[in-house]
Length: 112
Length: 111
Image (cartoon, rainbow over all chains, first blue to last red; front, side, top):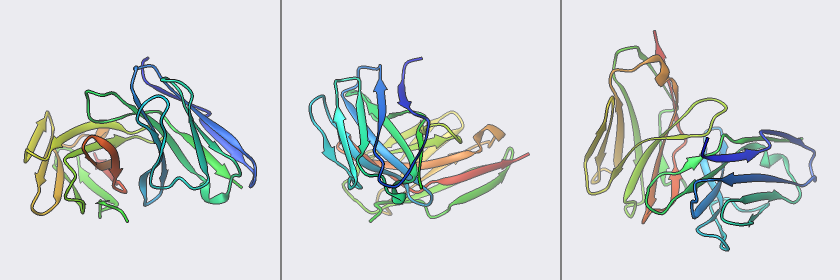
């Protein structure tokens, strides 16, 4: 099925470890986004990429880096994980002609 | 500073009755508003939207109302069905650029 694919679905990290969350979309969308969802906070934008080759900070970028590898793929990296980064992470993409995003199913990350 | 606020964390409604979800925003530059629905262990899915030039948009059982002067929008679900039990997020954007989300309202439809 066409859409946004995120890997892994679950991950447990120790404080200080690093990891990369992968995201790929097959809808030929230009824009891609990384959000985190925390209880009582809704979804908050971490980083986004308006088009291939560009990335920009969102609302909560500290502790994260991103790479827009090509038009399909947008990865999120935690260089040194902290317990405050325990969250559910969603990747999304959006085409030029439509409002509204298509979201992946999420990555549940726990940092202990 | 949250620009989109959903002040009711939860809503319980009987099957067949109306569900009304509310959302307030502070940024007067928002020009498009959306509602997303989310089931556990899934990503949010688009439900319905409204442009700032309209005050109502209807899609089947779902209607969104926008009151720009009050910076308020609401989602009406009539009639509510058990499959509507989910978390509903209100979102807004300016110039089709980056969505800002509210904290969400968990709807439970009782049989």
